[in-house]
Image 1: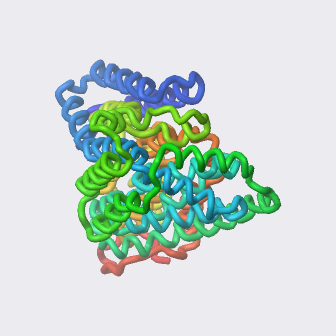
Image 2: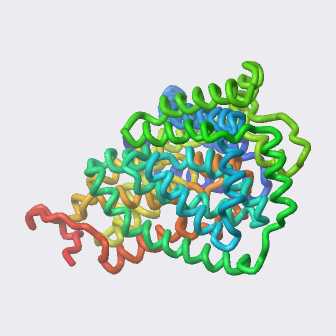
Image 3: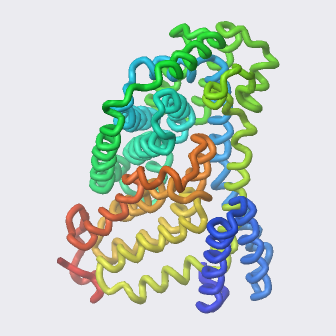
Length: 469
């Protein structure tokens, strides 16, 4: 769709949207959903004044919300999953025995690896962060390891596993949207993902050195463990829900019904093993675990989950859909694409422009479900024209989408992480280098040619713009 507006007007819309997001969130520190709604209203107002039809804007708003529907349902399911798994004793079980087995010096390293393996198996960073990630935050309190370190390790492991898991919805979307074989896409992602993971793991070992001679407060650990034992039956039966979820997802079943099974099993165990009433179970699904254990630190660990804990994040998703729609309707994306075609004289400049464009659009909209679907098909022909394999594009989408998401507080994933782990983005993101190093390595590869896949096309089909070497 070509823009109905001039290049100047689309530029003004882009600048207004960026100014409102930065001004509202960074300067004023207003709630993210309100800032996005305000930005969307301002862009819609300008678009209507300049002749864009409301029906077209409404159509794109509904389309964007349609893209958000599955993540919203998964988000709500994860909220109920956390509530039911706390009530069933599953997450308290991990906290209790994590305090027994994990030592402060290797804790962050272990957290990152365990989260990576779990997400690789289940394909969902949200499921990992919302279950075992929450448990690790509780263990972190007991070991007196700063929560921002632990949040960073959880995020790095979960995002790495999400990017390279063939079961991940974002990985499947990024490859399918540009017609690339899924396993080719996963292998190509290793170039930008593995170096960042290795650097992160080394960082966690170095950080762990400061805890080498530190003995965890045995009194605090004892209080946590005794309080958990007083309120939960830690029979190994409580491990059935996570084991079932991992097995079912590893067999290729869709995430949403599998989470439903995980919730059902959690509720079943909460009723029969933990002797919780149906009203207690319903309350945990809606509002999370709310019982007072009498110990503040344990309350911080277990008083989480439920549908209500995710409603603010759902509001952000809907606001992001409203915010991004008029930018699409007004043709801002199309104008930017035309600029790439106009100024990209080599494959290097073309790939750099695409990387920058997607990173910028994702930063504004905050949902890779939207940006992958919008930019993927539009950018795909450019790579073929310049003799570049499309798996370079699918990797770029993930490097500036899936991996970048935890850095953007108003993004779908960023908002989920901050609300679930209860650590603001700005506190932990510096200690999660894999999240931003993927872009650094991507740029290095673009300008060195290492890790860049090309295709063989007839020279007569190549334009003068193409770079052979």
